[in-house]
Image (tube, rainbow, N blue to C red; front, side, top):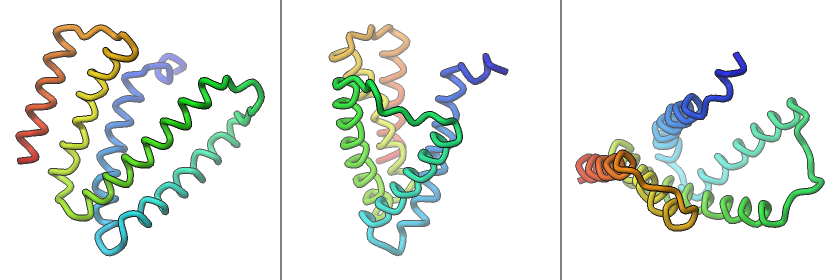
Length: 142
């Protein structure tokens, strides 16, 4: 059981599953309201759920947070906020089955940025996968 919960692949698949539902539920939810306010509501709900999980697991710990970690978590939160605002506005004005593939070009950008900034190696599999994701996104979106 412990091995199951330490599998990054399982959690990545869970992320993809929930992200797919995010597009469907988000498209329905934002259809008759302002996309920025819809994003705010979503964010409040996410905050509540994460706070509940952290509380249940007794994981609140504000001591010894490295400054660099805090800086990059704040930057990550800011970019997540901008991403969500763009995503929900795109969902409001476009079809979910075309918005989501373009959003997934983030996979390709992560490959590029991870190579540039994190010095992660781009193997032929990663490169080919990135090209296929790009081709699929372009094919589905246009």
